[in-house]
Image (cartoon, rainbow, N blue to C red; front, top):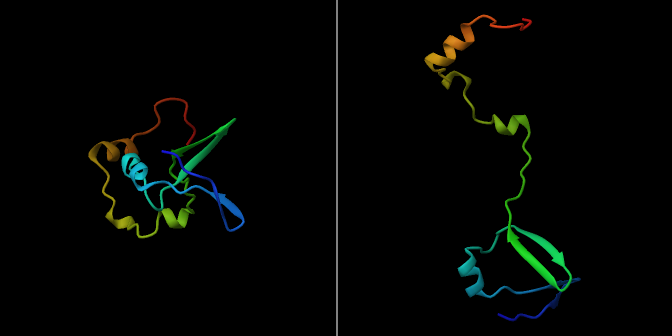
Amino acid sequence: MIVQIKKWGNSLAVRIPAKALSISGLGEGSWLEVNSLKGEILLKESKPKMKYTLEQMFDGYDENSFEPSQEDREWMNDGPVGGEKI
């Protein structure tokens, strides 16, 4: 497929044909990593690296809903087995 680089606002853009998107499995809202080489621009699907606060990660977590396994309970009740300082 051949497409042309065109002006889009203050930037340049390329429209990706629907067939290319269909084959790639990408679509509107997909994140792409852009790599530039001499005479080439390579686009590769990328997942954005989300940064969460500790509060966001535990939002909705009910501390009373956690039930440790028998193995976990035994481990938590075990004493030191080496040179640990407690």
